[in-house]
Image 1 (cartoon, rainbow, N blue to C red):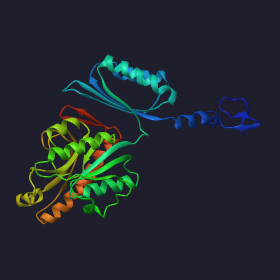
Image 2 (tube, helix red, strand yellow):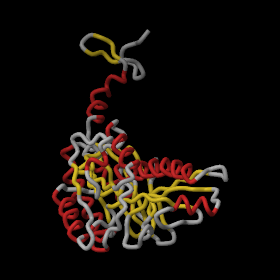
Image 3 (spheres, rainbow, N blue to C red):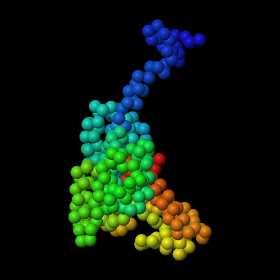
Image 4 (cartoon, rainbow, N blue to C red):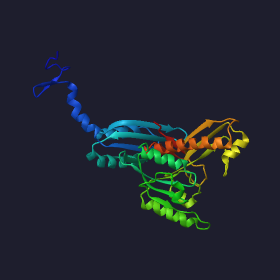
Amino acid sequence: MYRKGRETGPFRLRGRLRPRSALYRASDRARTTMPHLVLTLSCPDRPGIVNAVTGHLLRYEGNILEAQQYNDRETDRFFMRTVFALAPESLAPVRDGFGALGRAFRMEWSLRDRNEPRRVMLLASKFDHCLADVLYRWRIGELAMTITAVVANHPRETYRHLDLDGIPFHHLPVEKGRKHEQEAALSSLIDSTGTELVVLARYMQVLSPELVRTLTGRCINIHHSFLPGFKGARPYHQAHARGVKLIGATAHFVTADLDEGPIIEQDTQRVSHHDTPDDLIRIGRDIERRVLAQALRYWLDDRILLNGHRTVVFAV
C-alpha cells in the first residue's frame, strides 16, 4: 500500500493518489509538441565545436534527440548533424546565436524545421521506372516532400500509366539547336516553383555547365555503375558481352564532369553467365530504383553534407 509523503511514493492531487510519473506528464506532452529542428554544419576542425553547439542549445532548453559527427582527418574538417526539440519562441535567438557561432568557427551551417516538407522537382525521359518508384513512395508517405513539378522531354501521354494526378506536368522537348531555350525554360521553372532539389530520375539529357553551376549541391542523378564501368547507350549489353559478375547503380550529385559528381549512395547485385541482357536490364532497374530512393531519403532528412568531391552521409 502507498504511504503518503514518502519521496518514492505517490502524491495527492485533488484528494486522489497519483504516481510520481504523473508530475511530469504535462511537461512531457509539451515537449513532444515542440518543433523538431535539424542542424547540419561543417567547418575546420578545432577543439570546442561540440561544446559550443550543445551549450548554445542548452541555454535555450533545446532537447537533443539525435547527434552525429565526423572528423575528416585528411581534410581536417568537422561535420555534424543534430536533431533537437525547441520551444517556438526560442527559435529566433537560437538561429541568431548560430550565426555568431558560424562566424567564430567559420561554419557552413543550416537550420531547418523537419515538419516543413522539402520542395523537389522530378525530371524524366522515356525510361520511367525511377519516376514511377519515387511517385509511389511519395504517395504512400515514405518520401515526405512537395513535388513542385514533373518535367519531361517526352509528352504526358508517354506516362499515361503513371498517377500524375495533382502534380504539375511540363513537357519541355529538346530540339536540335535549341537546347539553350529548353534549359532557360527549365531554369525559370525551378526558380518560380521554389524548387530546392532537382532529381534526374533517368533523365537522359546532359545538362549544360551553366545550368549545372546553378544547381551545385542540389541536383541528384541516378545512373548504372558497373565494375568495370561501361558508358554509352547500351551499357547492359556491353556488360553482358564482357561477362560481368557484378552490376550496380550510383546516385550522385551532378557536376560538370559527367557522372563523376560526389557519390551519395551505391548498391550492387551479383549476376552470372545465365543472365541475358534483358535479365541485366531488369535487375539494373531494381537497383536503380532503390538506390535513388535511398539517396533522396537521405537528402530530405538533411543527412548529406558535401566534402569536396565526396560526401559525408549520416545514415540511420
